[in-house]
Image (cartoon, rainbow, N blue to C red; front, side):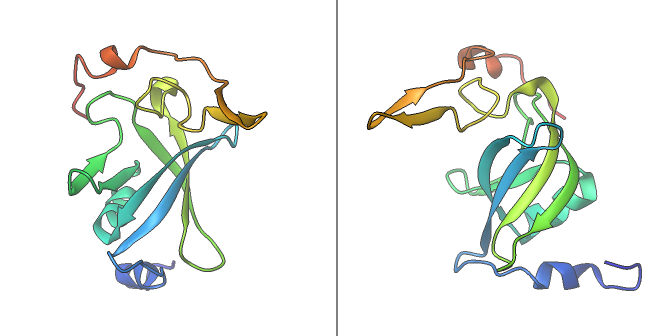
Length: 138
């Protein structure tokens, strides 16, 4: 995107689903580990770029969700990528606090299929009951 490109042009290149959403995968910029998957609408993606932090669309709450707004575990945006079909976004982020999952783990992808069963392989870093006790509005 150049300085002469209107801000909406890059957003118009994305293939939004019928609900106006696109899947967004957050990946740790340093380790390359997949941290989480969420949804973004046009406003969330534009604000993510403007504010330099992960902002998503909460389908359950039907509102914008600034990652870390309650827990303090903010995602600082380093790079944004669009896949070849223009229908999936990857955010390369620095995960402040080291916790991306509401279960208190580094990643939402903490279960591995072994012998036909999902097995938890990542430890809880912080008890999820205490993650949101003292909201940090950022």
